[in-house]
Each structure stands twice: as C-alpha cells, then as structure tokens.
Length: 208
Length: 208
DNA sequence: TGTACATCAGTGAACGCGCGTTCACTGATGTAC
DNA sequence: TGTACATCAGTGAACGCGCGTTCACTGATGTAC
Image 1 (tube, chains in turn cyan, purple, red, green):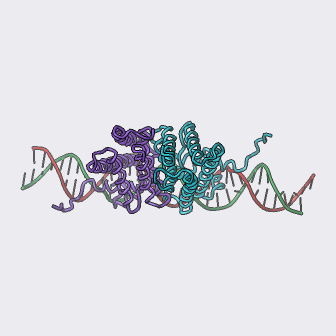
Image 2 (spheres, protein in one colour):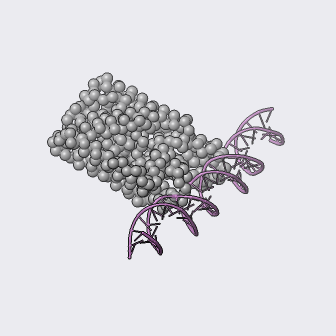
Image 3 (tube, each protein chain N blue to C red):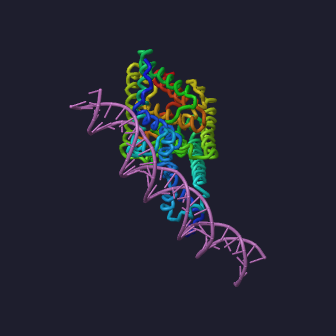
C-alpha cells in the first residue's frame, strides 16, 4: 500500500548529503560551500546547522554514508554472483563482470570515489576521518583477500603473486580507472580496466 | 667551477611552484592559499602577483611543470632500461622494476599525482587545464601502447587483451596505488602494485 | 478529551576573518648610445 | 665612460566578497497525564 507521502523525517538531511557528495566529487570538500548546499536543498543556513554541528560533521557523515553504501553494493553484487555459481573463482569472475557492467551502464560514468577525493584533501580532515578512510580500504582488502584464498585452495596459482596485493589491485584499478575515465571524459575506460583486472585474475588461477 | 650563488633569476617563482605543488597534493587547490605560499617563500602578496597574473595561472603553471617532469622521468627511466636490454619486453620489465624501486626509495612515499588531484577538483579549473590533463594521459597511453606494440611483434600475446587498455592500466595502477599508499599510510603499497602490473605484462606476453 | 510541555525542523540577523585581486609605487640591475 | 631609459622583482595599503559559525527565536508536531 502506497504511503501518502508523509513529511519524511531525515529527508532534508539526506538531500543535503546527496548534494554535498556530488559537489565534493566535482570540486573537492573545501570548495563545496554550505551556501550552495542550502540553496539546492531550499533551506536557510541555520537549517544546515540544525542537521550538522559544523562542516567537519558533514565530512564524517558523507564518508560513513559512502562507505556503507559501497560495502552494501559489494555484498549484493558478489552475493548474486555466488548464487549463480558455487565455484568461488567463477563467482568472483562473474561478480567482476557485473561490476564492470554496472559502471558501464551509468549514463555519465562513475561519479567518483569519495575515498580518493578525501585522500587528495587529506589535510582538511581530522584523524577520525583519515582513520575511517584507512579502515574501509583495509576492509576491502580483507574482503577480496578472503575470496582469493578460497579460490587459491581449489585453483593453485599459476603465477606467483601476493594475494593481498592482488586484492588491493582491484581497489587500485577501480580508483585509477575512475580517474582516467574522468580525465579522458570516457566512461568506458573504468569498466574496461575492471575487465582487464578480471583477465589477470583468470590468468593467475587458470593460466589463461 | 662553482658559481658564486648569483641572485638566481626565476628562483622565487620556482620556489612558489614547489610549495604550491606539495600543498595542492595535500589539501587541494582551493585550500591552498596564496598567503601560505608567500609566507613560505618569504615575499609579499604583491610579489606573488608579479609572478602569476592570478591563481588560475598558478594552476596552469603547476600542471605543465608536473607533466613535463613526469614525461622526462619516463624518458630517462625507460631510456636507461633500454640501454641495458635490446629486447623491448625485457626493457619494459626492467623499466617497471626501476620505477617501482624509485618510488619505494622515496622516504615519505610517492608525493601524489597532480592529475589525480586536479581530477577531483575538476570544476575549479578552466577548459585549458582540463584539456592539458586529458592530453597528458593520452600521451602516456600512446607512449606505452607503442612499447606494447613492439613487444607484441616479438612475443605474440598468450592472453587476449586490448593493448590500449593494458597501456592505460599502468596509469590506473599507479594512480590507484598512490591513493592506497596514502590512505593506508604505507609507502610500499604503490610500488608493489607496479610490480604486480609487471607480473601481468609478463604473463600476457610469455605465459608466465 | 483537554491541557502542558518537549521535541523537531527549522528562520533571520549578525559576526569576523581570510581570501583573491588591484593599484600606485620603488630600488636594483641591464642596455643603448 | 657617462647618462637616460627600460626592465626586473618586488613592496604596502586597501578593497569587497564569501565563508563558516553563533544566537535568540518560532511554528508545527508528538507525548504524558
């Protein structure tokens, strides 16, 4: 039953975060002014400070929201891939393909990685934010490392590589691919890099 | 013969660029104030505007300087690698190893890629800067693509990959590796990613 | 059911500071004749 | 060699605007009894 559009609680805050995220990815955190956010959201400045104690709280909220969303995306994606395959290697390869397609289907290309954006504005943030950043990258390393261990059990690697490095490489290729796509204004570069990483993983464990 | 330290022309400007570059890589362009640059260089604000018409001219100068330096670095590096090897594959592999060692030897890790920093502050810059950015990435693609073509002539690829993508992957892995290194505060992550890319190239052309 | 109070989601006005930029000026060095 | 002028590498003071932040206040909704 369709709820009759009640004044949704937390809606304004969510909209502020939404505007802020895309602005931060395009101009950086410092250049994202509170004025432009409230203009977009249609409230006054004091309204902003009702939702966020100060600008650094916005930074934190933005980052945790991003990390949570990204983790959920990986859960769903590789979860679905595993439902279709009970072989860990094939599940991973299918998941990577789905990831590439997901990004390829975005009309304007990947909107950008907040971790990367924050990383190049490091000094603007406090230790808490920097730690959140590091933690999330380590979590992805662990996530993919676990997966690679499972694969290596059944498929002894044909190429001797460090599996932590191979796990990291997905993050690296993704972040690097996003940068290339944005700079070249070619949305397809990033998904093609993901597929190239996929070729590498296949080569490591199957020799082709 | 040691020259008696004449008042070096262009010295102040160069120092301004030096301070600016490291500040931009740490905080971003917008958060890098002219005040902090002149404080570091020991001149007044008007002195800055003698060297640069406005802040966007600083942005341009910073970027062209960075691109030129990076290109020269690649010339020297792969030039030396080729002197030691007349096989194009081995020359490339040696060059990649030298690149990894170069970065591994930096005491504080890689200082960051200006292309990436600018990319995440896109909206702050004019079309000229964005075009410079894109051009330099295309130049690296071409540089490495040419190299890969030479290799492919002698070593028919064992793994079917697009050579433009494989060329791009070096940039992607480098930029992504820099981000991981910075976020994790582990300088070795980036060189290890370069070496992993090296393993992939070797696998593509030799099957191991 | 009515009343009292609390909470939610803001408004409106004011603040001071830092920022990029402009302008008229200057003292030392270089160049033409 | 001396003089006139030009260029180089800045100085010093002032500008206005935008920024993040604060503070007292408000009108609508929710909750206790």
